[in-house]
Amino acid sequence: NLHYDSYDNFLTQVFGWKYVRLYDPDQKDFLYIANNETNGSPNDNDIHSDNNVNDNNNNDNNDSNNTNPSLLQNNISLVDVENVDEERFPLFKKAKYTEYILSPGDCLYIPENTFHYVRSLTPSLSLNFWF
Image (cartoon, rainbow, N blue to C red; front, side, top):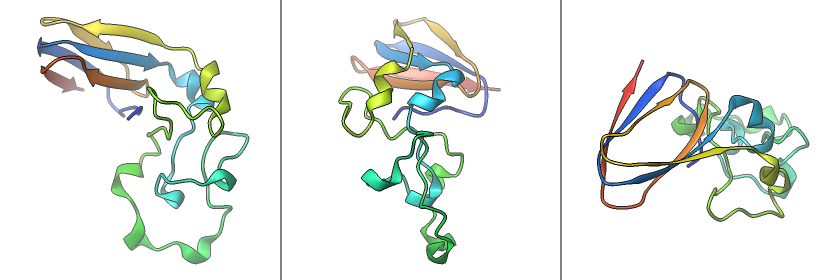
């Protein structure tokens, strides 16, 4: 999934190849970020002009037992980067990004709050060093 981490990261490729796509934090308005209230599963009425997802401020249904821990940071995009639903996420195509192919021995610095999508192109092993 397209997401960001709260720490700087060195993504180091040990063997195999990986595709990496980076979006600067200033592209967030185009990335349709999930939040806890929707558990990352919006319907068409949940997507607003600020491209963030909410539950229309209905606090009656807030139950801490239903919180999806993976969404606590509000750092995950709802968009499937490689199969974009342009009807649901029309602004995503405006997001600017940089692409890389990591080869064995490569190391890529990913600054905190930089959205990234990573996919293995071959069987591979990577090491992350967060700091």
